[in-house]
Image 1 (cartoon, helix red, strand yellow):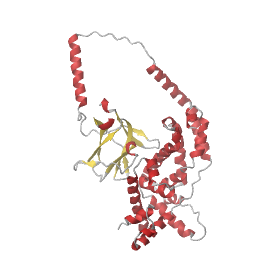
Image 2 (image 1 turned 135 degrees about the vertical axis):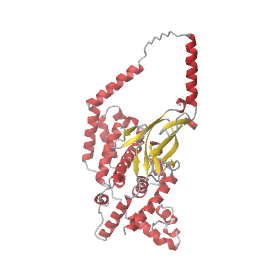
Image 3 (image 1 turned 120 degrees about the horizontal axis):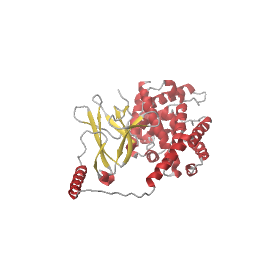
Length: 225
Length: 172
């Protein structure tokens, strides 16, 4: 048996109604619900004074570490190399008919890339076509034959494991969804049966900074597709 | 302060640490089940904030940006927690007894039962419950902080109420 509060009682808990607004038969249930809330511990939590010292020690180490300095220096050198103007002389020796053939080949490639369904079906986390206002449709696929429910959570939905469900593709164990994502890099993971977090086996993954891995999809600008 | 740190004055980060270290401590403790876990999370989040400070596009809104880092840290920890069930003692640490002698045991038991029940909620349900009923925020404020709609938050909260009741009845 599952216990649920009456919708009006939930509104009392939300502060939208008072006990007096309820019919008499619902008041005992609402009183029980309010007792539940009253039991909540609201005591302020005090952290140890050493926290400041530990954080600042780490921060100073990172700010002044030779590794950091080396990385910054390398980054500056790379940026200078990229941004410095240079004289480039290109000398080409071509036959006129080859120029025509190359132009035709380039036109063909552009035509193929511009087709909405150019990407193979089933390729996970693959940008497939440009949609409205610069976002790009990205198809996510997971093979999970024993799953009852698969969702996707990521930076694009505030890691909400309930917001975006994948649909089963028949009875093959393949789950898919297509999302319109803004250009840029997005991190995500699949959530199987509401609690098992699974990285996308077909996508690159990065450390989430807290010891776990997130999958990554890089969405190019719609015009680049 | 954020701009000073970005300009290279690392020591100014200590001011940010002092200012924000306790602000979300109770939120983190309720999300993670203990003050110790909250302290670890806040320490990690502060260091991460320093590492990524250049990405703080609006230095005047450091608090909201830092909250999102801490939130991600708490959610990541909760994911780990689902794989490695947390021992009961940890769940009870949040329910520190600040009661007086009258009915202290009963209140402590009720508080502990609720703290345990909170662990069955999803991190999203738990978060909205904590922000509203512990931190006292309105749905609109929670929506602003977490980038979610009020309707979605209410749905989560109402599911949380039912799940808590179910859990508390089951262990009564």
